[in-house]
Image (tube, rainbow, N blue to C red; front, side):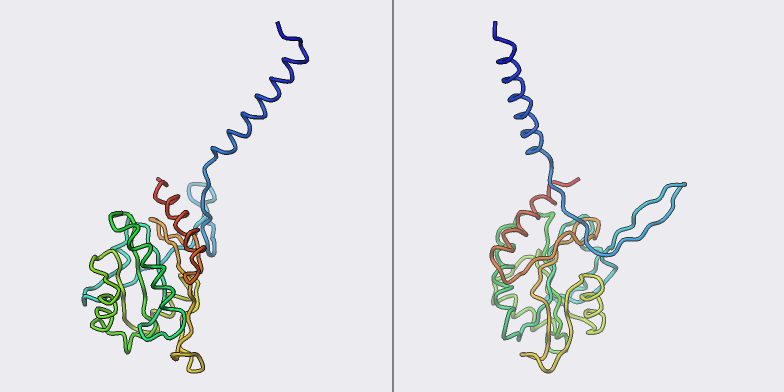
Length: 212
């Protein structure tokens, strides 16, 4: 029979180990970004989180793409233009990583908005996608009314997207990749020019794929 002090010692170690194990098994959850409102339903106060609103634009195949096409899906969005001389090539290199990694994952999609829609007509986007060897509908590149794209970028996706003649290429935009969940909530914003940041994005995508 073990002395009482020995039993207490081992009991304490076991309890501490159990706490550590429990802590390690806690599920990590991603925050919901953007403004929050409250509303009262049935006498209870509920939090209403920021959501991406309805949208509709033409893609590289001259097909209409809307928010409804992403119902029940996780997607990564970005803002770019095909003649971008600065950060876009780096962004597209990283987006290609996602395209290739999740080529068979039906719950994940990619969506790139052109901020130079006057030039980036569907046939231009099609040629750009072809140069990147994009063949599946998993990655839509869309164009449309400039004001609507800018408003969507700045107010909904919470990134910079606008015309600026003083910038290289005539436009200024964020290099961000925006992670959107199945409920149209923004769950993360990452530097799409940085490989380590995109590694972090991949980890967060895996978390969302496991969410119910």
